[in-house]
Length: 428
Image (tube, rainbow, N blue to C red; front, top):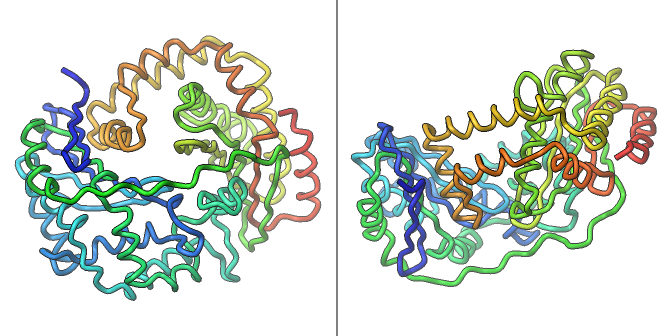
């Protein structure tokens, strides 16, 4: 049996069916190809604002409570998220009520009422305040980092937006943005579980088939010319710890090295043998937790390493962090370590066959972003990775020309001078 099936309605709505007959629930996901990178600077945060407004009542369900109760009646609990490229609405539900779930999402995506905009604005402003300290200074590492990576570009803006932009977004702007981006061509609907492909296709056709087709707007590509020097951004905050994020700019997700980068991330930050936690936590006691994560976009991305330390441990932690990365560049990964990490990765891929959310991401998000990779493909290519190949990718990715650093907390000027020197002489 194929891992997934795709269909496309005449108006451009795309469907992904992932048969998982062993499950007793289904995952239904509607993904719109609109996010932070689609926004003009003066409307930063409008994609996320619109995501919130989609829940504020529809033609059929007057309030968000009515909508939530309708999902609960079919075993669901609807939620959503917005990232740089997509806005995703999703709910688990009982497979016998797939048609009802599709109808509920059609009501949300096609017939929102835009109720209570000012109330929702206040909620989002409260959410946005989590990114600032008591002095109104931005302290969210991710927001600071993207601005350092892509200054003066939509990719460098906060997904929530700023107080200023949120106050300027009114009903007219929300409705205009909705009409521009919430269109059939931008929509992928994915169903995972004990679902029949034809039943799903017919349900979607019934609810979305008469939605008039319109062409999608272009998005602004990532900047081609980037800084060739390592950069740092230092923000004072009256916390008991200093938090830092070290990031390396990556190529887009379709780059042939993407799987190798994911493997390097696991070598650094996955499982009991992860190099970052073994060295920084278990051997030296410099931090409670440290982790690496990758963010891949269509034409760019970055890997970020995050940790928090006491002020006296800041310099030793950064020194050791660079040593770990230099070693990954300069020495091939031992065969036994690579074998163990590969084995763990293969187990996780196998376990994902029981996880409808993971399958929805793999195939639903994959179709939305033109990056579908089957489990079989990943498993095969993982086993082809060699120490030499990974070392080559580590040299290409972990280098000073791709490197940025954000530091937030009660640091000193001595810390700043020392670590900025290390940035320039890291050996990367």
